[in-house]
Length: 240
Ligand SMILES: O=P(O)(O)O[C@H]1O[C@H](CO)[C@@H](O)[C@H]1O
Ligand SMILES: O=c1cc[nH]c(=O)[nH]1
Image (tube, rainbow, N blue to C red; front, top):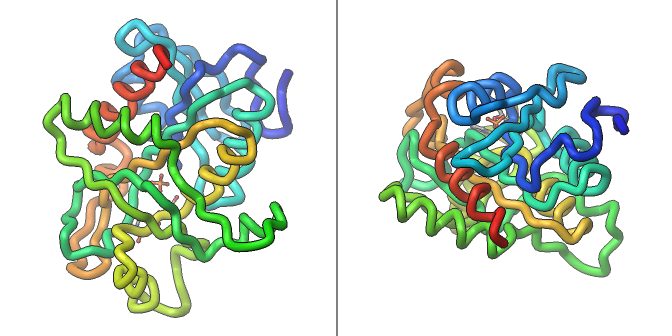
């Protein structure tokens, strides 16, 4: 039962899918943390795997970059593959002086410059939010590992290279927004529409105020604390 974008068969995905933007981060997670991992998708280079973590079935598949891309993959996983939970594990730019590079943030809400919500024709402004059960489970898992995880709002931007410049993006901080990434809005809206659960956890890869940054290789291979929080959450969601 392939879809236009996923070559897997129905049943190939676990109940919970971890979703990094980068296909090589998906491969790294499968090779580093899963046992008996099987590749279930490689269409368009969007690598997907299903294996075991602490004896529980877990999948990991890339989303690509931006709302249109994660919108396609999350829609197909929720609606055609019976996936119940998607946990995005991404990189993000810090907008808050409270944060530093490599800090972890869980996105409770997703402010956005994206028009993704317009398709739903709601008679007001939608508030894309994380699923409470996934978020509270992730908070518990972070505490159990003694990892500090900030929880707050993200900015989901449609432009990485923004003509309005850094100052325009950083202005979202005045409303308490912690960090900027590019997929959480579409993911949260697809989950809401499908009646499923979603959460975005990000690791700060660069700081828009201080200029601190990590390399592409570090983003691919070293954001392991975020991966472990997401994997522990996925394993616990088997009991929900
Ligand atoms: O590291 P990922 O998960 O791709 O996330 C961030 O990195 C990309 C931009 O470099 C965007 O996809 C943004 O959301
Ligand atoms: O979307 C992103 C991701 C990392 N850093 C940014 O500035 N933006």
